[in-house]
Structure formats: structure tokens, C-alpha cells
Image (cartoon, rainbow, N blue to C red; front, side, top):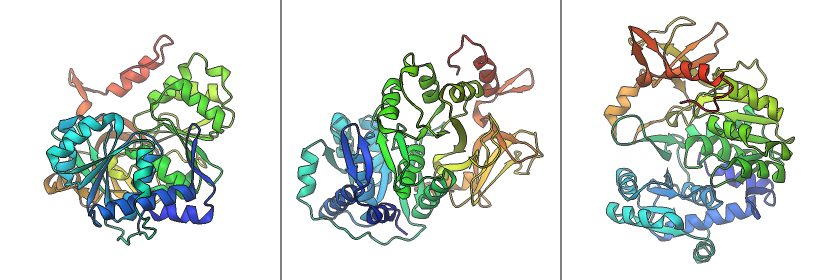
Length: 424
């Protein structure tokens, strides 16, 4: 049940179809498959065994999926890392996960190598030209190591609001099911071209953009650092028909001064997540780009998708929609009792998407996973039709004069003022 089979199967169907693009660089499914097999060979030659953890500290470049699927097909566990981590943080991620090795982009090699030394891990610096030469020296391991559905595929560190980051253990089954649901829900096929602007080291970009695209056999066109003008240029150049982003990206595209000079008519589907989408931004974007925006919700701990406004059902602006296929959600009070429609409580989630637990943190796991339900810490309400509306984070609530005040509600009012571009 290895997640890497989504690549090998798509490569088997159409090896010449473009899988990943970065401006003029294009990797076909066959080339991506071959390169990832060589990464698996490199890992084997360096003594990495199935179940070992391997860090990936790379920006949105074709090297990311090459290393990601190489680690998975070797039966090892991916530890995605933000490229902006400093030495101390790198050392924590690698030592906490017990990673044997980390792939790090050359621009961030100084902190990566220093952190790896501290953690006792090996650092493989990735750089154009040199990395291709190095991979050529390792025989490709074409076989995909067999793994069980509940084996860890990815340990995704989540910052939380207190203490050191916790590693959410996402299994092969968690991630495979999640990208299958995304592909089916958004009706993605080989003709899909997705703008890869979300960081691939983050759950949203990794699962909903990269993995959903690979399983669909479509094309992921990458943008290493988000810039609204460059994003519009790529949409026009590559005929992007799927855009996935966080609300600030939508705001930036909407307010880009040269927006109207780009042809964005290929855009068919836009997906928003990562934070609540201000209703005014959603309306403005849809009007400007003549494109439907579907807002969803999830967390690192839920692989990440939990709910969405589905393309074939009524869509409610300001709502995170209804649970995805195979997932249950409800709103509970402090005693874990379900609250009636219209009342605010905490969202809890059960389903194939919920993590196995926090890596080596049984106490933290027991705190959030109770009776099979994952407690999110997000406050929400739902209506009579079962649509959920995020109110705010439990910890962000302000109590003023005995009243509960949610920052999200204040932001929504501020966004309605024509002179306000962004509010936080």
C-alpha cells in the first residue's frame, strides 16, 4: 500500500506526459519515476533502511517530488522541513524524528549542514547539475518497498501554539485516501494543470496539489516563491486550470495592478484552505477571474483535508462546507457533548484522514485523540444543512465584558470597507 505507487502507476500509464514543470524545465512521468528510483538507490547505498526517517528541506523545485517519492519507494519515512528553518530548528527536527539523512537545497545548506551535524544526521546538498551527476552513480531501485497501510509515510511537524513542534504521523493509507478523494472530488484527470504555489513541505501543497496531481496523471507547474505577477504569468503560459492557494494569495492576485493584462481564462477551479477566506475577497476574486472558489478545511493532523464545498453541491460563502467522503465531523462543548445547530463549539473529526498520533508523544496524542475523535482546537458552528462555519481558534478567543469576541468576525467587518485590503 505504498504511497509511491501513485507515481509508478501514472508513469506506467503515460510515461511521456509532463508531470512537473519549472519554467523551461519539464520532467515527464517516466523521468520522474526514474529519478526517484535513483534516489531510492542512493538511500540504499547510504544505509537507509525501510522505516528510517529522511528529511527533505527543499523549495518548490522538481527535486522535491524526486526526493519525496524516492524516500517513499525505499520504504523510508519523509520528514518535510521548511526551507527557512535555522540551525537550531533543523537540529530539533532531525534529532526528534531520528532522521538518518536530510536532503537540503544549496541556498540553505549552511543551516542544514550545521543542524544535521548537531543531530548526528547526514546532509546531502541538492544543487543543479551536481545532484544529477551524483544520482547517475547510483543504480535505480525500480521496485517499490512493500509497506502496510498503517505504516508511517510522512511525519509532518506542526508548530502548534505552545512548546516545541509535534510530529504528526501520517500513514500511507491516510495520504493515499486523501489524494484519491481530492482527485475524485475535483474531477481531475491527465488534462489537469495545477499551479504549485503552495509550499510542498506543507500538508496542503503536498497532498492536495502534488499528490492529487500525480495520482490523476496531470501536470504540476511550480512556483518556488509566491509572487502574484509571476503566478499570473504561469497561469497564462501553461494554461493552468486548477489553482490552490491560501487567502493571502487570492488577495494578492486580486490586487495585482497588471492583473487584467493576463489571460486567465483557462482557470476552471480554485481551491482555498489554510485559513478562513474573507467573504469579500472570495466575491471579488470570483468576479474578477470568472472562476468558482471552493473553500475547504483541514489540518496537518488530518492529512490535511477534512471538509470542502463540493463542486456538485450548493456552495455557501464563508463556509468550509461539509465533510469529505469517509470523514465525520461534529461540533462539541467542553464536555465533548454535541451542540445543536447554530451554537459555537469545537470541531472534532473522525475518519481515514486522521493521523496515527504524534511521533513519540503519547501524552499529546491522548490529549487530542479521544474516543476515536481528533479534537482540532478550532471553534465553529454548523447550520441546518450540515455546513460548517469556522469562527476562530479556541485559544484566540477574546473575552470582553463577559462576551466572547472572535477575531474572525471583526476581520470580516473590516474587509467590507473599500479602503481595507487585508485585516488581521
